Length: 233
Image (cartoon, rainbow, N blue to C red; front, side):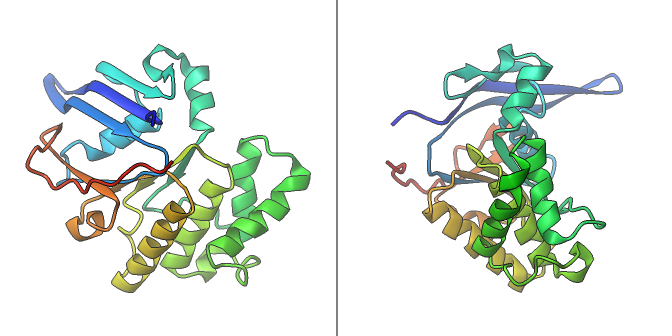
């Protein structure tokens, strides 16, 4: 089965004043359709930088990132923007608009992807029911719990029919009970066929994924536990 995403020799160096900081130091990684991959590691290890590369949010210093047969390193800014429209992003801080109700927040994500207006409301309703918020659609984000807000963010990402989902510490701002509920939802979405890459600092959360890697000093730690699963067919 062909990889959905291929990372080859990925390096990223930043300048901090006059000092070079090597955030990534040679990453090779394949992600298959239907994967649930967790990327863990200590703060500053490079895991968020890797996620940014997978999301076409940053350019590598060296190496390549392929989505299908498309080499992201060859694309201009317009091409990268087009790629980003096909990726679902879920962030630790939810990034919801407080002046919009829940269904409008989900619709907004689709408007960016040019989904016709006539389809946006019905699709938003479907996605909110999918994540268990069918009875909260007219609420504002500040009327929801943290776990419910993260469900809205996941629904918004799913509504764009992304090739894969990138989750940046999706349980980081949640209490333990809400974190467990969100993790169960993510697992359910993966069982439905969603390809998911999740960054987490919590090894216990990482172990719930189908596969996990640990980043240490910008590299995949060869001693880290990787749970092998057969890619979905």
